[in-house]
Length: 303
Image 1 (cartoon, rainbow, N blue to C red):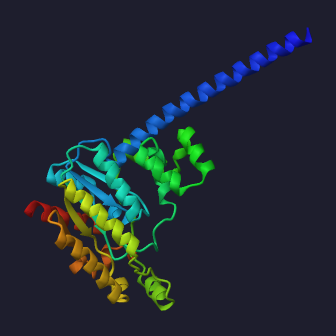
Image 2 (cartoon, rainbow, N blue to C red):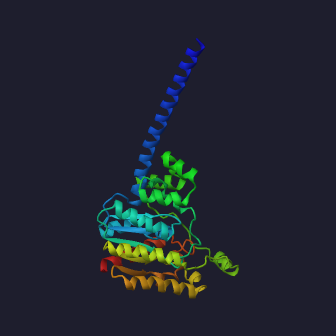
Image 3 (tube, one colour):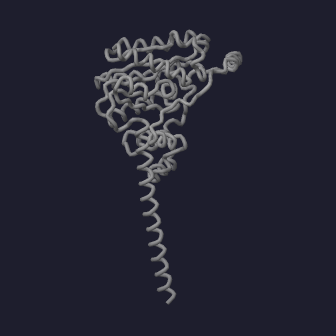
């Protein structure tokens, strides 16, 4: 009698666990699908786009996607993420070319720190978690994270979304790409950082330069036009490390001169001296975004 009861209990428990797991993974799949749809909309992935933006927060805050689309009458994919380095961006390019058809021009954000590790996130690979079903991205994440975290994200899809990615998904559904960095730069704070030698340093790493060149060659082989866009960064920060700054500019110029499909477009002059357009030494405020986006539109229309 006891064995019969125990056997029924085990069977009931196994059924309960099985139903729970099936329900859990079913809703995990549904919620992930919805969040991923919103995130794809936010980044402009899996859409027909003639122009795509690739870069980190400098480009994200510096160019108005809606203004570009309205005045150029084209679809624009704004695939920009906070803190991504040149290695991340190479993967972003590969993903974009795989998922978006008809891209003719990529606007790739560059600045004096493009080949520096300082100031960029060491955990930027986590922003790729929602796209782990892509084999290249899955392999990239596997190399970057520990096994436990990898397996969790692999099998529990909703765990791939942090607060930042959830916000991106919501903004994608709402169609919001606004620059909310209101205010202007605190010049006294910047001057203090320079005095204390705590400002953001320029350091051109050979490996980063190599990856950048590989990315440009890839786009050249795909016959995609590239605009290497240097949005304004404040002159005070480049003046204090003029030699390193010029070294970076020369690297970007070299790539542009060697590849027919690549153009280097810098808005440093005269805008780097207009402090009213900066939220901080690197990023533009909404006023700066509108001004520089208009400059970019004028350039594209003339070329």
